[in-house]
Image (cartoon, rainbow, N blue to C red; front, side, top):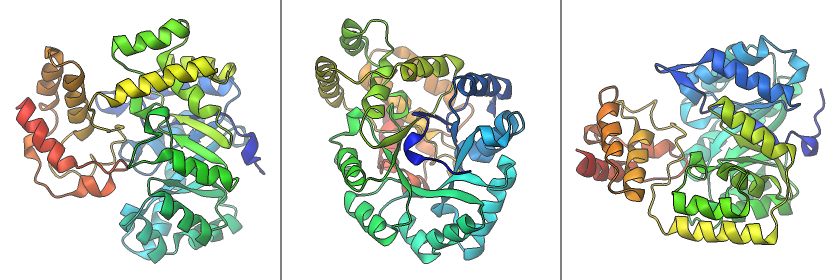
Length: 372
């Protein structure tokens, strides 16, 4: 099945933040979400080996592959460099992914989270680009690309070394335009100049651009009272030239419906709307927040079982609302089922896989001081 990369669904269904009940993916809820999305005529599903501790791939088999014809949808999956310790691991992981998803091939396959240092060095060491090209010749991969969390300099280096790259997935949202770590605007410019189709991840920055201070939310509502705050972030990235698909890690049916409404009438941002976004950006950057997107890459390997994204969410809430007692109550409940911030032993596993390059160890020390 040949796919026109420049005629892809504008909204992609990310399976990193699926709804859960008692720590397990809520299968019936996911099925309803998948049905809403598919009935709208969209069909791009994005998963990964590490999402939901490996259960995301299984859920895509149960909620999608077993319930819809194979030619009615496309699946994107990813090869995590940090899980590769020998050449045999590459084939083992790939075969396991096919089995988990219940498919014979992946429509899109990405080298996961390429960035400066070990994450890219591993792919070079084990020649995973070439390995994937061989799987493409066998028909097990239809389109090959990579997701990227590195520097603009590395992006150009990788693209120069691998002209076989068909698309690239980057973190892009209006808040990160000037972020000195993410540098998303520069990454976008490099890809657009080279005419490489772009898949956008974290357009709502892990929910940060949907759940805002009421005073900031008023700025959006004054201009577009009928539109959700999240829709502004999605419209910002989806209308950028060169953007192939915008992923949304949807967790509820309500989020699916709201996103479908946004993309059914994907209006470009008017000049006065961009002025609102610029004003909101300025205000958000004035409130110190931990830049965690709740991807949970850090949690699976944490020896102390600390729910790091939830700890950071608590701190961010307190920074925004210092007098909100509910944040500390949330933390008290959290540590009955996971490790405390003070349990951190400083092993650094989390910092090695964090796409946002956060100083997690120091932040957990700060959290322990504030919360405990």
